[in-house]
Image (tube, rainbow, N blue to C red):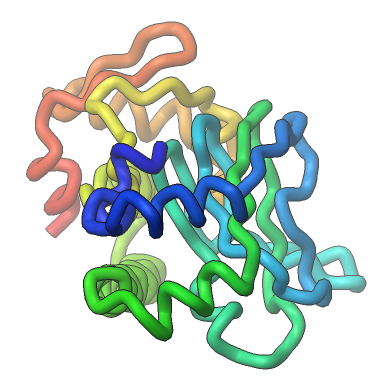
Length: 218
């Protein structure tokens, strides 16, 4: 995963060794918490392989999903740069291997590595654009178009460098990410397949027209 991360490839050999020493991997079962809202932010997090969602679950029982996180993605840098408890949950949608880098190593890179800082600026900007797009889609698009944009967002080369156009994901997982029912997901996927944008196989979606997914419904 580190070899695939653009920020890690720009570190010196000594810096990379220090990152490896200060990073460990945990396997989180499907439905398990990668991190929890309200806990201390002690690590920068990355998905070695698997799929998770960033979400908020209220004591009232209300819940919402913000974004999917797939293999190769790093997240939580905003929380690390603020002295406050974590403001969201990250939940594994399938068994996933998660990298945990110590806060002290993250802070050292932030203080000493220009390439790392440049990566963080780009990542934060991409994440901001992603969330602005989500608000726009929620307010202006129907559920078919929102699902198309949700799938397209999983292929941002900076945020999700481990993604391929063959996405191993169930319809239930898509529903959890897009915030719509599994039945509605099935209907929307067949509509997108009829439009020639993707191909549906058991447990797998193959994206045929990524640009078409990103503009579907306009």
